[in-house]
Length: 369
Ligand code: NAD
Image (cartoon, rainbow, N blue to C red; front, side, top):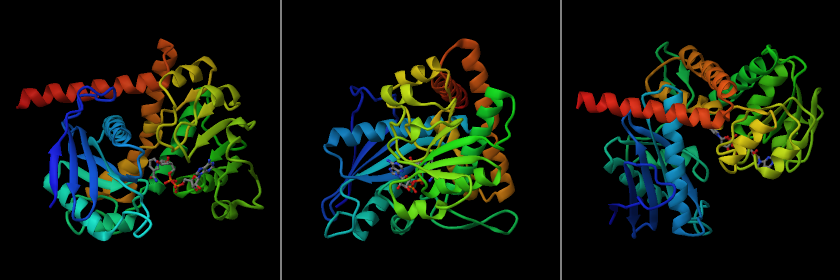
């Protein structure tokens, strides 16, 4: 039988006044999951469901706490009426017999999401496919990004957030170039993209269309294939792409790629990409600042997907979604200007803005209540 139990995380280093952290267990299906609601004063907590074979329970708790807080910050800076939350399912994401991911387990997780009455909206994250989300959605309507929806103009808008994430990263690169060199033109600009997956491949095509010259890397041959023998594309190794002699480095694969070692080796003057948690530690943002590398904070640059998920759910059309995604440029401009003025890293400026916005929301919420 499914059980939901709030767990006390107040003593953990990654606890940031999270509203709730709920352990969801169902011995019948093997479900062992955590749902964290960081802050729901702006609206329901929208965040992906991740499935991963964590080395221990503590690692899963740390992950869900950090990811949920990150979603609150992302939604606040994207000016969306959403809160931040995240879920992790503990277990190998392959289907049985090799892994734990059965339909019955996903249905049980859906019942756990449903029990939160819409406070948490479940999206897709690593280890969970759109089809898995559809399975989860058989137990609850509180899922996002499962299917195309009818927009206000009658056309259908895809549930896949990656096109908007790629658009947002493109806008972020342009905003950073504009700030750094007074022009957002991409003609002849050299960009290194690490990872040509759902986002990276779309970003690469958009950059080539705009006249950029690309250096790309991916660990999967199938993802490199469309870029082989293309004009203005050089393929390099994924482990060393950050060292490329380029103007912009766009991490679109893994977290932690900006660390004490790689930052010393980066030649690009701008870092802007889609990957979550690009900074290995908070101090790495200071290292980038010291080296004069302009960093577009990841959760600001990659907010396009979240913006799309929200607007599709609200029935907005593609034009409205694109306009909202393009707003990432102005948000970054404010962050860059403040970072210069205060000599504080862009990441610290972005975090401070997010915290201020959440505090303001709390104050107006308590006035209304
Ligand atoms: P994806 O899995 O489709 O693509 C990731 C790509 O990176 C794959 O092609 C993979 O082979 C490649 N890769 C893995 N390790 C690599 C390495 N060492 N060197 C080079 N390439 C490597 O994922 P995605 O949806 O394109 O997302 C990319 C990143 O952006 C992820 O960190 C994701 O969390 C983040 N993100 C994605 C979205 C979205 O809308 N999909 C939104 C926000 C953030």
